[in-house]
Amino acid sequence: MANAGIGAHAPLGKITEEEFDRTFNVKGVLFTVQPALPLLNPGATIVVIGSTASIQPPAGMSLYGGAKAAVRNIVRGWIQDIKGSGIRINVLSPGALDTESLRGALAMVQGPDAVAAAVQKIGEGNPTGRIAEPRDMGTAAVFLSGDASSFVTGIELFADGGMAQI
Image (cartoon, rainbow, N blue to C red; front, side, top):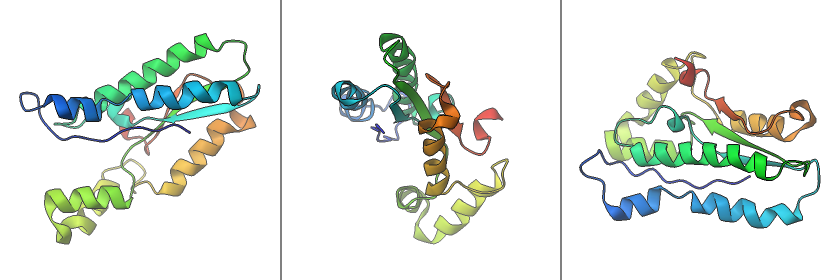
């Protein structure tokens, strides 16, 4: 699995060059995947972590969304570059995920006392009626890595409870 990303929160007009360089980190994905290729056998799978922000960036997160969209398109190009190798590459794009990182970000924005209610509200707004758990992403990654998806490559799988579809 390859993942790089940090979400700077700044609206257009207030984005700094430092935030751009820190947030638009597609370089990390490239230089994780590229040196791994010679070590992989036919049948191997690479799962790159994206985000639903690739198609629906929240306000103030254009850099993060742009970086994740770039990752999606890089993977689409890579599957042509590795054609015939027997290696598959896909993007797994989670939506809101109940993690310490999310809870920490919510605490910074809304205050520590509002975190539980904010997480509950995120879940209630999802078509599944709940927020994703880390296990949900693990299950999706296992699917993308296993035999059940042996004819799947170059896709962006949105594991977000349907949020990217509404």
